[in-house]
View (spheres, rainbow, N blue to C red):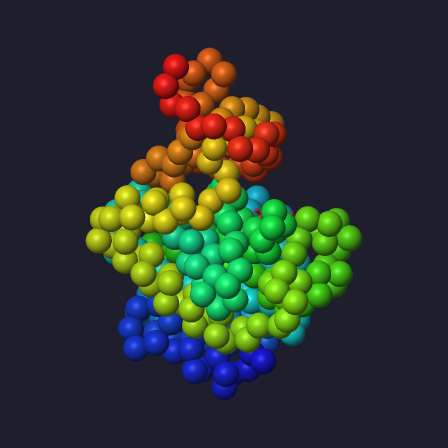
Length: 271
Ligand code: BT5
């Protein structure tokens, strides 16, 4: 169960998880994280955890359904100690941390659909929302929001969402201790954050690639009214998805929604 007491046990000596704030219900953990960061002298590593959200959000103002008493809704506050150009790479670091933590605690093998959906057996089990703002002290504050469907029944989601979603309990056949999963998530997040801090983008990109389910597939990426179709061939050092079009040109996209057209296309880079 997530309570003030059980979440206090997640506190780490330094870095991510240095300060843990638990609320049973919030609008959005990202909003609470920005508020709390603004009040703190040293907000880096602060983590907000909630048992439910009334206005959980996804990218582009979409809704993140956040039923109580079973799932994970948390936000890690970062004051990036690296070049701000690399902030988009946090949207690779967060899903890698989530997927690794799920694997360590359950043995399941989640995959990441670009940019940052956590999927189990092709169904969405989690999502990431990275937001960055300058606060009134002109500090760059990043809120890395992570939602994972852990134990809440998938049928408690709307009909539309439950048709594409899954949960860890559904995939595993038994419930999972959220505290154990969050502890693994915070430790993994710290590791991946350090890759960026130490300028080791390559290691982060390699980890992301080893867990992803997008590269090597014929996909289309929709971003607003713009649709790009081609073979997903790689990730740039800025976290963009590289798509080879039928003309052979490589396009890089920094955001959007991926649909898979054809699976298991052989990834040939030559003519
Ligand atoms: C995401 O957006 O996947 C990012 C979700 C981030 C949620 C966390 S929870 C903690 C923190 N606080 C917040 O307020 N947000 C973050 P996107 O890729 O735009 O996907 C949104 C879409 O996912 C929706 O339009 C639905 O189709 C689907 N969806 C909504 N709720 C879901 C759920 N619980 N499980 C699976 N899919 C869901």
